[in-house]
Length: 283
Image (cartoon, one colour):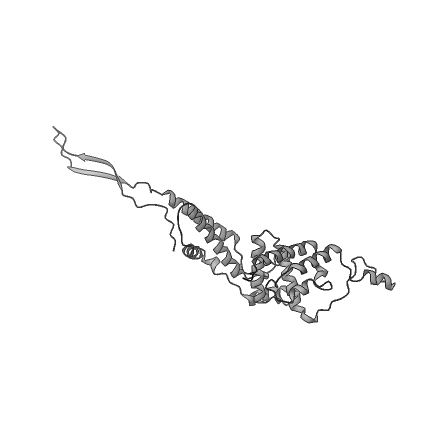
């Protein structure tokens, strides 16, 4: 365990010594004693100890500010992050990141720390946070049977946690992770029974009977959407851990792309590029 000392061992210091004896020529006698008054010296805190204390406080503050609570229900009608990621796994990442940062900062100042020791002390000092785990039964119960996030499996939650961390580390929109999770929940809920219906423009007049106009308008998505989808299809490798059929589902013009936006596809494109970089290459 790492122990942060804020003071050094010190000895009491003598302040005053005064002898009270018999005054010359005085008939009155007084006790012939020596009194010594002492005062504790001020604690001597080394610069190294101060620096370590500051670094540890910073690591603790990071854990307290960045951790996530288990899902406890919607807030103002909106689900919170705990609805679609594994909060226990995410909090482990927060602890690890705090410990890594402290060890690196200490090393920069010439002090070598054992990361395992720092991590253990952080978890000990913040046991309330370290004890937060995913209770999937409680999560799905609070979401209710009609919420698509309730259809996410624990494996999905783990993969979405990795995606959430990747997005956070690389400055991508965390809101888009929620959208990705929702689409995965929709796929899980409907599966092969989800019918790919025809797509019409938002302002389409459904009383139109001209077959040529219908053919020209039906299943036409904005070019910005279709071109971005084609770009993603051409470069994406793997399945982001969400199943081999998820990306085809997501980029199907009659299913996933119906709810796509420039922002959501831009997020997916950047995410795919990051996962491609992380993908091991053949030797």
